[in-house]
Image (cartoon, rainbow over all chains, first blue to last red; front, top):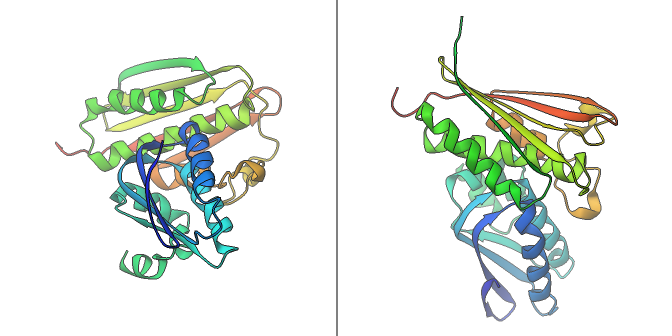
Length: 107
Length: 146
């Protein structure tokens, strides 16, 4: 089960371990259950304990972004490792994240 | 002429649960070249993408075997070949186009080959429809101890 906390319309979820094609199926389902409540508009993914992510994780993030963008919200990430940042930067993910502009310009 | 220092072959069922095992096994094998943490992560990510492609696209979640051949060379190269005997790729250049995915409903980002090409020094794909696909990748390990 994913650890999470909620403050108003913002849901913060802790991602732990490795996010690949195998684990992404469970993470996707759990995130979708958590954001089922339509009052949630912003999702923050805390990646400080995420040790590995490939492009399967990018698909998970983009899918949740689409759901929340329809509500006028979005997704941000925090605590990502340098390598995960490279994967996300390569795929252009920072351009759609809430923290996109600052992160992208500093890289 | 370059000399091959070591070689290993890994064969495993096309199950997503083996993705982690595959990338960790290859990264442990290449540790003989004293790579940096960044180089290890580069190879782990590229292997993960290639193995995922074999399982998800090559076999489309049907049973089959994925084979990884990895070799270490005296000039610091690690050469990795990830192959399957799955359905093959009809149009390789289309498959390698960033953001192209044959399974949009699966939320695939379509960035697997782009990730491989970014993190490895050379990536070549050969495929025959109905017979399988081989992804040949080279990483030049500069390493921390050299």
